[in-house]
Length: 208
Image (cartoon, rainbow, N blue to C red; front, side):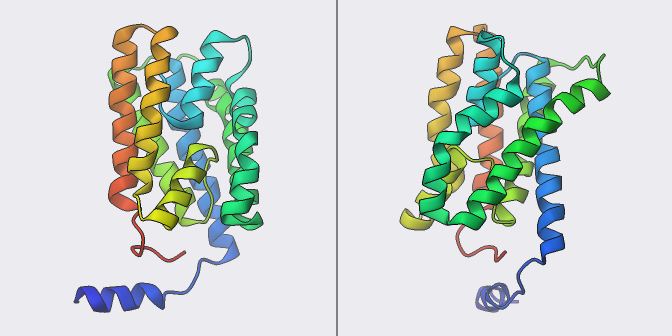
């Protein structure tokens, strides 16, 4: 099959059904929340608003889920203007779902002992796959993801690379809260997350 034939096939592919979108959001939020749970279990961070919420949860006596919702609220207006109400509402549902699932993982695995290296790499891999699923069902985890998608559509910049640049700021800020080795692992994990997005979410490659 030629590239032209593949493109035509993508262009005529039917959209996801509502049931598929619901299932996609559920799977995406579960994967993302589990990845963030692994990171939280070892005191690591990642990029984006999820990383910012993790970072704040180590410095403040406030649960991660509450902080994750709070840091994403300011981006809601941008999401409405950039992507419309449907995308914004789907993203808000995804953010609330991740916030709700966060304590569930801790309850289900109270005695979990995981290597920091494993948590940093595979936690970010799971989170990246979850975000990718959400992207493909016209949703996101808000925050930097909204900005990254907007710039990808308006400027042609890959969402993964845009978010990677923003993540540098968050991971660098983690040095004020976590030890340098943990910050280094967090940086490596953030690269893994964004490479998942950069390699698998490109303009024209997918039709929701």
